[in-house]
Image (tube, rainbow, N blue to C red; front, side):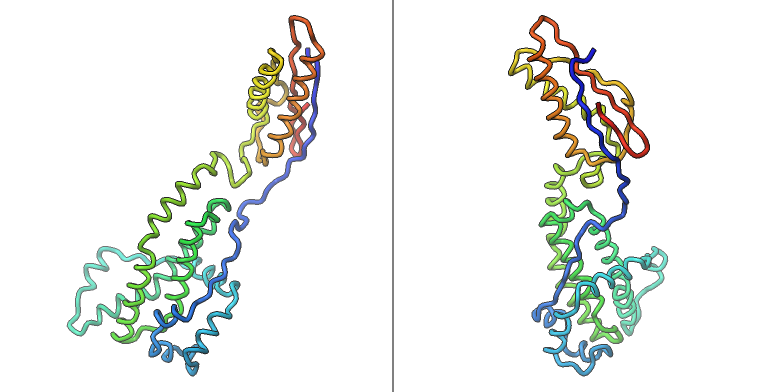
Length: 291
């Protein structure tokens, strides 16, 4: 028999998955980047920017919108990567004129932006609180920067352009030398924010009964510390109901309601026995009620 009942009526909402979790990142080249990764000879040979001097090219890249950059990555991420088989590597062989080096360079020129775009897409799909960690965000921006540097590199038709491409890759490898360490540290620090059965702040298997039991145990200890005794909490109704829900607001509400119920029960009953506080759960397709 309950000495006091409390009621909360809440609406369930269906949350759409697949929402982009990271804000658009705006990347801009510095003049140092352009001088480092875009030799003037290669820039002038690119048909898209022929006739522009180095200063014009710098201004052009600095003024391109983040939408353009993101759409370029989106398009590349949709392309499948071309895998090299052991047989293809075995029979590629070496040629006396060095053409095998040029073919390998052309393969990397086409393939690396696609694979990097896949990695960028992976960063975008991280939970928001993880993707915004400073160390992970720094790696994310490094990949975006590498994508545009490699994508905008002009066509490779001779060994001189191959040499310039190889130098670009060496510089990028040097810039990315600490990426593995940064990823390990970033994910390690984010571990405390990741909870099982959660997508961001949404508990995909939220159980009202488990939350009530957790809060009842905590508030019961507080009540016993203050009054020397505490009523038991009995739960009935749809005790096995689970559904996606944002737990944090209800966590606070239930704590306050149980605190009021237990205090009123103890203060209203001075005898040797204290009646239980009964909590009833009612669940439907669109709503649930805690009484």
